[in-house]
Length: 161
Image (cartoon, rainbow, N blue to C red; front, side):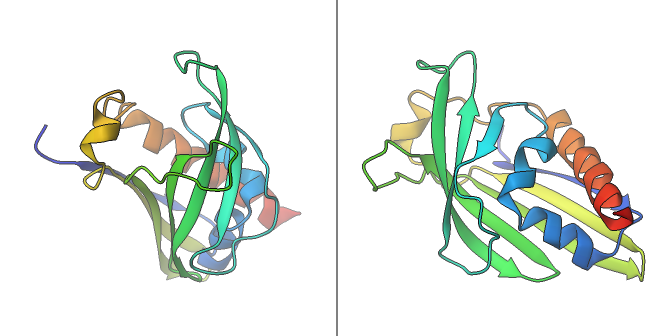
């Protein structure tokens, strides 16, 4: 595969600010996740600044430990237009090793109650040391579409609450 990123786009019937608020809340990420790997937010504070690190408990049947933890460093925070982070393994020593892959959500307001959301997974900066034991992408494009549908459902529920 020459292309080292993939994207999915979905129009949701929710204002961009509400969609952004859901994405900036790490406690919602397990409900949004299209892979089923994200389990629970360790750091539950809302994402408010570039450079902020938040950790997530994860599970994957093919991971050597099954359960593991990822650290995520916020790289993009432009409310309500874009949010993104750089994940990497958190070995618990306070020094996460970011892996070079990124998640980015771009939000385009289509009116007062409609937003086009594009989710991009980019692994173009993954170093060879990670590529030796991880396959990229580790999932198919349907997982991005699933995530967007989960986000749409969650954002719609919270906007009615």
